[in-house]
Length: 103
Image 1: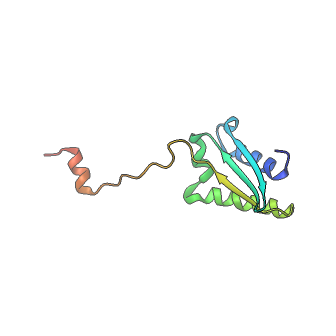
Image 2 (image 1 turned 180 degrees about the vertical axis):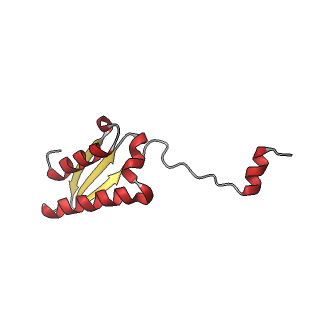
Image 3 (image 1 turned 45 degrees about the horizontal axis):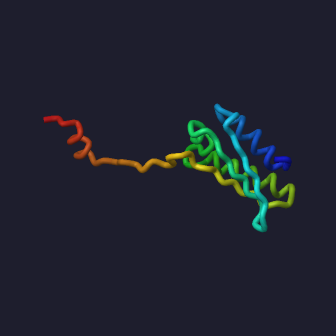
């Protein structure tokens, strides 16, 4: 992780999370550019994604700017924690009332 983009991402992410020791960044370079793969503690995932993904979008924008300064295309992949996104179990009002067993 001797590249400026990885160092930038590392310091940025560690300043956002509660468990900076769990932050892992893997930097790979291919013909498409630079791919940064980020792994954080599952409890910190919400801080990295943000509301409606706004924090993640901002981080990606900043990385593109850093990449442009170094004539490289930089992309960010955020690894989902084990168990990943849980499916929502929205119920209708009738189903919720039935679950309450109110007679």
